[in-house]
Image 1 (spheres, rainbow, N blue to C red):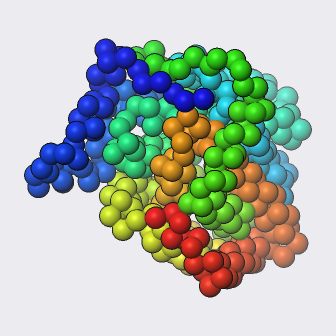
Image 2 (cartoon, rainbow, N blue to C red):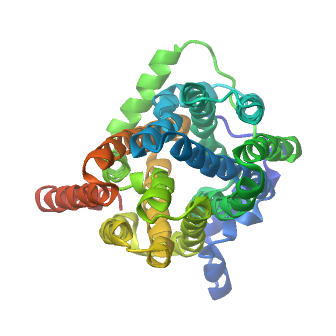
Length: 436
């Protein structure tokens, strides 16, 4: 199924005519600087509204993420439990291709409204149970699964919507800015979570998470959505999913990006979900330390979002991701070896930036190389790869941590990641080159 171009009256704000004729015109130095500006995608009104609404909602998401980690760690005292409950948010990513196929055949406005309402209802239920004292680990686990289902359905169509809202020339900027707002919320959310949890416990933090989902609903109300081709009904949902996977397999660059994403998600990324355990049990600090580490990671990611977009376009995705993988390995090892909170905070800032550069870079490769009509389905496959491997990595790293210690489990994962990367580079040099 191919998406139709919206009528001219409905796509004026996207300025596709300028994109079409730009290569035919001489480019002045000022225009060249503007085209490489990391903020250039904000020139498009509806993309800006989408980012603002998502930012408000994501502040609540990060308040909730910190509260979940603190609640499980304090309730169970086990790294494996914290890792497993956090992983449940990401395991529903297996629905990503289904969500992508469904969003490819429906109105994005309607899709975002219903998925966001579902997130609000799940968040409200969690907050009600927590404040009434009826929340236990099993109920928390069930609610995390439902949260993950709603999140993956929303994310499945999000990249397609971004690609619809900006011209292809601004897609790199748009994707890094979208990652930037997510990580800026990662800064603001934990800084809010720390005093909220300290003063009122995790219950108020869960309520704040639920209420702030209105941010996306406000953006949806104000945006002008591009026209969407009506689904003709001749293709089944299963066939639609299969065609999306076929499109991904046909492109070596997309497959390379998915492979790098999977390796990083399983072996390295678990440091994100285990920050509360590292802060409370290894560094012997409190919930405020966990919030601060998450916030500093987000701050590093925000800076990287502003810098990486232009650099990736200049040096090429393959070379950029090769360097990023090496830096990610070294910085994650340094984090696990940090003897105290100050050292962990110093390492966490560049680590947050490098991880953002890796996952956004691989997502950009997938979005940039996917056929237009299958973009949401390829994006859904990307989110399956990232989230499912991260969830499995969390479970395995958390279980290993209860046996050999969290530092040792984290370092072991980094070492395996490095060995596999070196082996790939020696045996299949085209892995990074294919993403160029």
